[in-house]
Length: 607
Image (cartoon, rainbow, N blue to C red):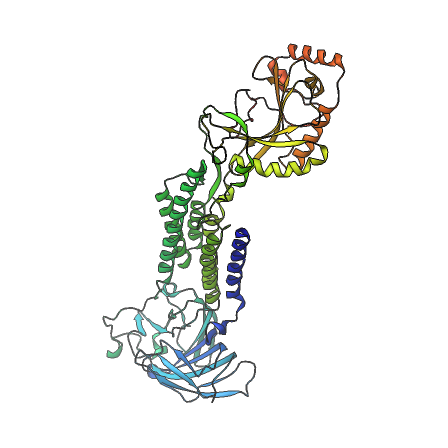
């Protein structure tokens, strides 16, 4: 029942994580506004006076929304009375806008709808007058004038922003300044000269949340009413004012640092817990990168944090390489059982009480197959996925970064699990005993579990054993058959290769009945012969078929003259002939030494 309760908890945890994405956005925020498009128009007239117009396409969820903040507007803005908001799909639902200036230079656009605006897509339109008679907006470079304008900062990210400069006509058409690349990827979409006016349509891809948009073009001096040569007006004289630079929010640095510290802490805890459990189970945990625990944890956290910062600062190739390093730092190979010289021991029938006293192994906080590990995994990965869901309307790129940030936690929780470790010989033998005992009952075969105990063992119920085998008893005793057993050869992790081990006496009826099996080697004395037969595949079905086939050979009586022929053949064989081509039973034979017992990756005990 405890097993079922643990699985029910895991299912509930996953269901709770999925609910975070099924619930609509208004459940998390009563109002949510997302700017889908932003188009601006800057008109410069004589005397460096100008008019700035904004068109914002805003999607509203929830509501009602009664005001919209606009941060980073020109400090000397004089709002014109033609500001409106309407539904994007039609023009008859239209409401006036009024603006209130804040001390920080932002505007609050108050919506004239009596009940505010509810879910839908709306077009906000407003204009204001401003002056460009300021050195931070107009400067000179030889016979050219540099016109610079900074757009507002939006609360949500946006993929594309468009700006149209409407200027008096000069001798030469306006072009982008040499420093425009410092302020983002800006391109000229269209350039038109109409009458006495020049229009330049610019576009910029991807503006992050809270990032100001800086636009800068070169125009002729006369287009702005400046003399071709001579001193500038006093208002435009150079001052020691800082040049507007692209303001990059340090969010990538802080997010990368936080995720890096989280991964480093989890990697260190997982390595310490895995080492402790491996020691208790007599196994060796094998990290993919075999370095000390502290170095692997620091490396994983540093790579992950640096990857988040590099990708967030538009260096995706470097970020991908660092992310790969973080993923590999948390991966583990299949563990193996620790090998050590084995002392003396003796074989004894395992009592039934020992099989009933087996306790399940406790799983830790870093194993996703347990309820605790699944909870931690759901919290970490679910938190990143929920963050990506919330960031998606503002910046799909950063949402993708958060989703890929879950990759290093996958090998950390899904490799090196307790279920990957080799089980105890008693647990392995009990599982095979239950299956084969039920499957071979119609054949009249009896099975029993035997274990190899230390010679000084007194309590055989709780005593550890270093190897277990299943002994098979036939209906009728066959002369010369000393043992018919199922042994288990271990590989990496939970891999187990079951095989049949038969010990017979030379010049016996059992040896004659098994004449079709090649690969017999000398056993404990000169009169004993041993053979190990493996099924083609290490599956219960293949092992069962092999047991039935060998049983049929043993129950089939051989002629008396065949016994002497087999004895003569064994006497003439060289050691290389003992591993010759297999007969009717198509299974691999062992050429290992007879004195070797249970050892990882070798033949089973032939003795």
